[in-house]
Amino acid sequence: MAIHRKGNITKYEIIKVASRMFLEDGYSKTTIRAIAAELEISPGHLMFYFPTKDHLLCEVVDMLCDFQWKLIGRVTDEGASQLMAICFELTTMAAACEASEIARDLYISSYTHPLTLEKIRKNDAERAHEIFGEYCIGWNETQFLEAETLISGIEYSTLMTTESSSPLDVRISGALNALMMIYNVPEEIRKDKINKALSMDYRSMGQQILSEFINFVNDTTESMYEEIINGKKNKNKPI
Image 1 (tube, rainbow, N blue to C red):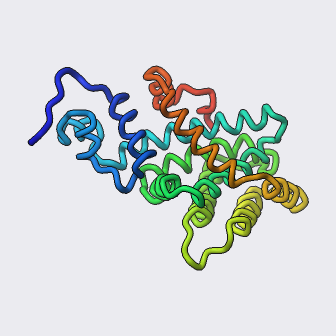
Image 2: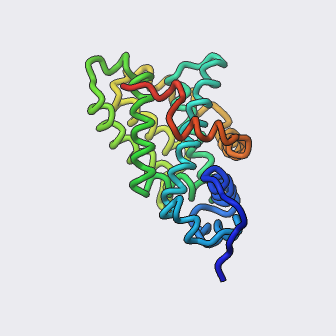
Image 3: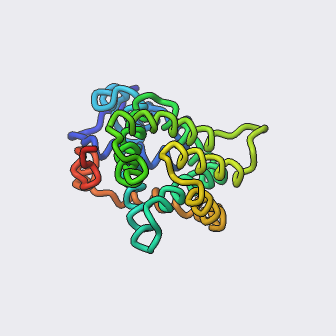
């Protein structure tokens, strides 16, 4: 029997519940029907706001991208370069996916659904212009977007593992080297950043970053959510 909740429900309420369920139960295991039941509304009511589960994931990816921008800002405030912060981000993402099936499911789903993959590529292209601009003199927006098409494939291959996959440190090293090569980072700098990334306790950091993202989602207020979704952050500067 369909559930009908009294009163109106907001997109923000739906996102908060869906995000919590994705991060507790896993994206793949969470259904529209289960989210609707948690909200005490009918699946049809929920789908009026979000036609598919992928559309809900898009909102979570927006928050994830915002979280990662803030993480890069924090790492650079602590003295690291933005380039090192990018290396830190991919390293901890890979470590989080190795340690947690929930994290792996969320990231892999984000990289395999067209709606969310497009968001990731656009977000990363904006960052790349800021971080790699000194190595890519004369590049235009299209070139940065084309580069991110390649890099998103590299990131996916690093996060998605099989029985024959290389050990985590080998995958991280190869991915960071390939990423920086695409953006013309000199070999000496590439080696330095990779060595620093691998010298970190990245496994513990990966678990910590996942916990921080969960807290970030839980602490996001409705006004903060609207600001993220509407693209009002300073990070959303045109390339």
